Amino acid sequence: MNRTGLSPLALPLPPATGGWQEGDLPGRRRWVTLRQPLALESGGTLPGVRLAYETWGRRAADGSNAVLVLHALTGDSHLAGPAGEGHPSAGWWDALIGPGKALDTDRWFVVAPNVLGGCQGSTGPSSRRPDRDARWGGEFPHLTVRDQVSVEAELADALGIERWAAVVGGSMGGMRAIEWAVTFPERTGSLLVLAAPAAATAEQIAWGSLQVSAIRTDPGWQGGHYHEAAPGGGPHRGLGLARRIAHITYRSEPELGARFGRAPQAGEVPGHGGRYQVESYLDHHASKLVHRFDAGSYVTLTDAMNGHDVGRGRGGIAQALRRATMPALIAGVDSDRLYPTAQQAELAALLPGSDRLRIITSPYGHDGFLIETSQVGALVRELLAGSTGRTPVRPAGHPPGP
Image (tube, rainbow, N blue to C red; front, top):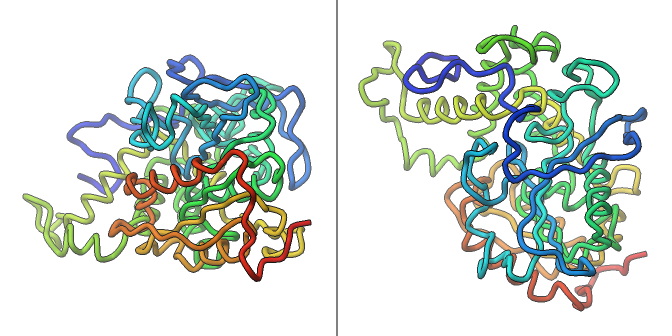
């Protein structure tokens, strides 16, 4: 193993972008295309916007059984199902989707979009521009979480869904779920937020900026215009380093210590060109990501997460959250060091429809919201059990919404 994020044993040189490209197998994806350019929060517009999405179950005639599930930073629309046929990895919440499961597809119509700015079918930096035969690359505009949610609202319109029975998201998906609840409270029937904050903190911005800098300082970045490079010529080293940095924040120190300790990688000698097991583990995750993701999307989405603040332009977090009067479940992971439970406690205290903070017990840190599917499934079942006809709860001390 070298320090480029590539394994010499199995994977070929990474393509310039690991994102889905026109001509690739569509898999289960469908698309909706905006009729008008998207007006961006930062000013200007984004033309030719397409959003990829996948669905499970059948939509009720009135759309009342629709559930929106929003993915995290390097996730995509492939919520459930195997890898292959256009999908580079298996469904990231497969254990929760299907007949009899928490998101019971015999009852619920589940919709999962690939976020705007992503790289698995939705418009992003690796997409071709509608105004000329070139990719957006480094000219792709700055996006905010609100921009992303406004496109998801147009997806709902296209699907004939006036109001989601529930909006569910974790991490970056949780940020979008919060924005849904505040921007479109009348269209959000209930809310489940997992391991996400009301606003990014200085430390979270710092972690994100390190990852963005790792990509932008890679010579293969070329100002974001690298997508036509030959295999191995893109910013895969920077993207691999960004993934290593991020993955440390996704897991807990006790878990890393218990799994790896100070043990060397088999057949290698640290200090003499070899690695510790924990280094090999990070290399493995870096190697996987550079073959299925786009560096420009990583930068675009990280910048959007760093700018996340549900209270921006709304009188602050507390005033903004008063708008979201729907039933809400807010959960944090007890070992999460990236988005610690104090941030979810703030959400639970300020949302009128939340009764208390829920805790997911896990040694895995932030990734616990993806791994602890039994505990998350119980929260999903609780939310959906009362998602129709349930009156929002306002615990004592909560002011009413506007």
